[in-house]
Length: 402
Length: 57
Ligand SMILES: Cc1cc2nc3c(=O)[nH]c(=O)nc-3n(C[C@H](O)[C@H](O)[C@H](O)COP(=O)(O)OP(=O)(O)OC[C@H]3O[C@@H](n4cnc5c(N)ncnc54)[C@H](O)[C@@H]3O)c2cc1C
Ligand code: SF4
Ligand code: SF4
Image (cartoon, rainbow over all chains, first blue to last red; front, side):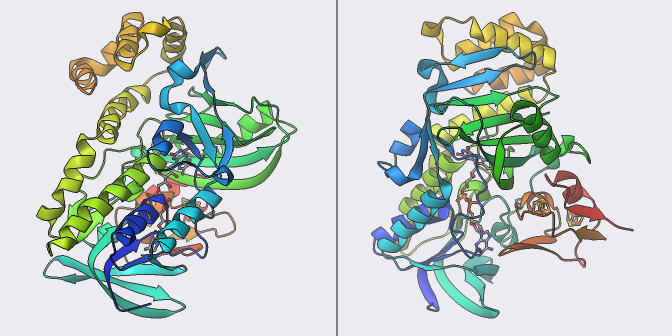
């Protein structure tokens, strides 16, 4: 490890890896530091990603793909199953990845592009000078190292503390922390090409149960519930155990995964002097679906592009880095986050009767009219009570966000 | 006092993200708590998906 780099990337998830790769390809000296001993483990993910979205970044390697998904099923609290064929499932038609392999390959690519990688090396505090970030203190094998960098990327995931140490408040409100548990199960009877989502206040209050296939008879079976609904005896693990007992009594569990996804709004600002915040650390995971792989890749790459311009010109002040913040907010990602936040705010207030009514009415919709705005109009027409719950302001927000 | 049951914790980071004081930290494979900064608000105990945290008097 050297004492000085152009760029220091904190965190070796998809966001950090893609940022490191982008900077390295442009010829900058990069150190990627990851506190865990191995990249990508333990996994904290259901591993689903939209095909089109992933193809924006690469042609996926065969070994990344556990399953190809052709349709999604949504199961209402009353047991009614709505099938979303490809035309309707939108970007949810996609892949279920092997994140252990995927994440490691991304870091591998960053290393291949010239980035230096250190594992089991934790950033324990930033180096601050006159309010600007100048690198970090890294702890490795019980020794502290001062590493200086012209630009630091906080890609430290959901538990992000680096930006907090730099003065950016990243605390997630309890009710906007989706708390999750998941089993990788085998020996279960599933459609290997369909994802399933179960909603309802008995199965997953403020969230959903997912089944994401990873091949024949094998799937990630997991659940997320709103943090404020989590109680002793009714924690995600308890809901999951009950679900598995009733749906897959003979299935075998070969991995336990715990995790958290923020479903709040993104940080109000994702840059500071010599600092850029990407991926989950920036709170850009999708508030409705909990998906964050795409957002991490997108923001990681963009940070690399905008950050490199700053480095080229010898100016990495927050003002110079601001186009990063502006660009992602105005992108497909930023708009989807805003819209899905509004939808999520409605979703978490719905009682089972509302959910049943909505899912039944959507299932009747004509496919050729199927777009998100029509979807909302349809839901509101069929379920005026939902419109009442939203209130005038909520309704306006929702419509405006399309 | 918050006690971490390490035999239950799966080091997921949920608790770390809701802690208003930054008192929790995932070191490479275990959860650490700084009892000097913890204000015993109990948010971490509530959010844990596995029930690995306990508030002790
Ligand atoms: C249960 C669950 C299911 C999910 N399902 C999906 C899904 O199906 N599809 C989807 O798209 N997304 C899903 N997500 C979200 C997805 O996993 C994340 O959005 C994604 O991993 C974010 O990538 P990232 O690079 O921002 O952060 P991470 O992948 O979390 O990487 C951050 C890295 O930083 C390291 N780090 C943290 N602090 C430090 C430090 N101080 N020093 C050094 N290293 C540090 C961490 O160890 C970690 O490796 C799910 C999340 C959970 C919890
Ligand atoms: S939320 Fe629970 S399982 Fe996750 S790190 Fe904290 S104590 Fe461990
Ligand atoms: S009790 Fe509150 S302050 Fe203490 S560690 Fe838990 S969340 Fe943080």
